Each structure stands twice: as structure tokens, then as C-alpha cells.
Image 1 (cartoon, rainbow, N blue to C red):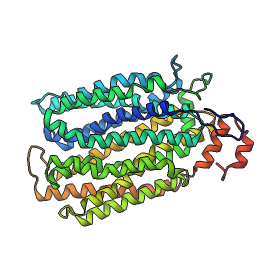
Image 2: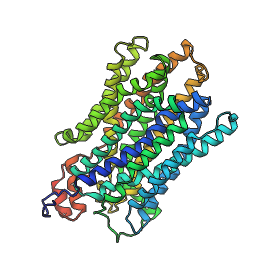
Image 3: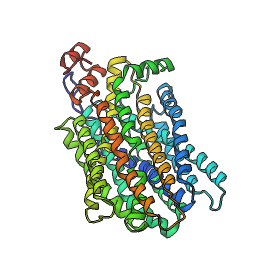
Image 4: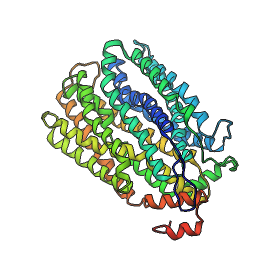
Length: 460
């Protein structure tokens, strides 16, 4: 039940059914995301025997295209005036199309020549990336339309991230057993059907409450002016790109399990060690952010990422006893970084609206989507190049000692570079939760701009 609206009162708007459907969408979305981002490189190198360098190049080229595609789609979302809403029509389209694109990727025929493989992989992977943009940008922007309450938004987005981590946990345990029992294409079909089913409810239950239907269309000039005026959007996601581009954990974790921990049957065990802490972090963050500003939590997560990676390197892959503990420790840092990165875009929407008068959710969340995809692609390319350089061959059951050593350094030391370089950038990010809530109240005309300025902790 909604409370009465007064200038000083912060209302809640969403109920259990609406929040649950938001979470279910992320279960489905991350079935596709996790399957592609976590297992596609292994599928290409060890089951279609493509060169890791070629795979990395495909990932990189696809993300260069996303540099154009993602912001352009953000412009389309902000300019479009569709009958069923600003964000929900795109979500409905993605619910149907992303499963089909996923199946197409794993339908690559066996026995194709190298040129045919590269062509097929390039087309299907780029198509998936474009459709995933349609899947990803509107769902995060939808949170800003569901409520104007910053804490409620944090809760809603946390539910989404918790659901995403749950999907990651389930898939980390189930994908390889399904693949080994039935094959990659059959696994992709089964998981796509499940993903489609759980993404459906949000199309029924979610409501767009805070969309200005009379807002003027956003021009390309407006977009550049908006980005120039929203420095914290650029600062945060630049730091995310810097840290993520060398974060080779996701791309390497399957290879570590297969070649250093005992075989493909260890992939679920290795993933479980890292994803359980992520799930715990996602579940507890809403309560933690009520007491601690999420920026400080994010910084702590970055430092944990650095410490965990260095600890893993010095302990070494030959010492398996402490490995699960180190993996779980790295999972804590990864959980904080992965879950919280998606919460800052909503804050940047409010800041951008407060500073420029333009509420460009589509552009803001397209920058987030682009940052997520470019980091995954570049980290995959970074993995592919040294793996090829040290002689990795997916057709071999056992890799040489020099190859294993090079893979371990890629898994442990490369991530430290990006996380360390991101810290000075994060120091420039000054938005804090209480100030963003004040900006949101002002943007919704619940308090005057003069009153908002007087309440802010600093001049923005």
C-alpha cells in the first residue's frame, strides 16, 4: 500500500509480484549471458578446435561494433514513443529473440573449415550481442521508471543481481553435466526454453510509473551534451572498463579446472567455489547499503579482488589444498564488483537529470551494457593471445608445463593490472547515496531545486 505523497516523504511503489517478475527476468537473461560469456570460448577452442587467438579476435571485433551499436540503441530508446511503454516493448522483443540467437550460436556444424568457422562464429556472436543490448539496456532503465525511491531502486536492482547470481550458480553446476550427457546444442535448446519461460512474467506485471510521456525527443546533439554534463557516468564506467578488460577470471576459470584441477568434471566445482560467495554478497547487499554508502563497499570489493588474485598467484596451482578458500575469497571481491556495478547507472540517471534536465535512461544504461560487453570481449581477447603464444591446443588432452604456467599467470596476475589502475579513477567519483536521493526528489518535483541544493553534502 502506497503512503501519502508529501514533499519530505519518500514513498515505495512496487509489490512482491512486480519485484519477483523483475528478478525472474534476470534469471532468464543470465542463463543466456552466463552460457555465452562463461562457456562459449571453451566450446570454440575445445569442441570446434578454433585457435584461442582467433576466438579472442572475434570477441574483440564484435565489441568494437558494440561501441557504435549500444549507444545508438540507447538513443533509439530515449527517442521512441511506443504505445506499450518506453522500455517494456523492447523487453518483450528480447524475450523472444535472445533465446533464438543463443541456439544459433551453438548450432555451428562440426567439421567446418577454419574460414567457415570464423564466419559463422562472427555472424552469430555479433547478432547475439546486438539482441542482448535490446535485452539489457531497457531492463535496468525500467528500474528508474518503476520507482523514484533510491533505496527501493537499490533493492529492486539487488533482487535482479541476486537472481542473476542464482542463475550463475545453477548454470555453473549444471551446464557441463548436461553438455557431457547430451551435447552443446541440446543444452543450449533446453536452457533457452527455460530462459524464455522465466523472462515472460515481467511483461505482464511490471509497471512504468515515472516516465515523462511529453518529454521532447532527444537529439544526437543532446546526447553528446548529456554525456559531457554527466561526468560521473563517464568516470565510473571508464573505471569499470579499465578494471574489467584485464579481468581474465571468467574466461580462464574453465581452463584452470580442466587442466589444473583434474578435468572437465571439476568445472562445476571450481565455479561453485567462486559463485557461492557472489550469491551471498548479492543477498546481503540491500541490508548493507542501508548502513554503508555503496561507493565505499565497491572500493572494498576492488581491493579484495587485488589481494585475492595476488594470493592465488603466490600460492600456485600446484598447491590444491588452499585453492577453494582462495577461490571463495576472490569470489567475494568479484561479487561486490559484479553486483554493485549495475547500481551506479541509476544514480547517474538522477545526477544527469539534475545537472542537464535530460533524463536519458536509455543512453545511461547503454553505456553500462557497452562497458559490460567490452570488458568481457577484451578480457577474452587478452586470454586468447597469451594462450596461443604459450602453445595452447584445445585438441590435446594434456597441455605442456610452459603452457600451464602461462595460463596460470593469465588467470591470476592479469586481473591485478586493471583493478589497480581503476582505483585512481574511482577516487574522482563523488556521488553518494544520500545526495542522489535528494536529487531524485528534486527531479520528481517533490522538493524545489533551491531546497535540494541546500541539502546536498557538496556542490555538484
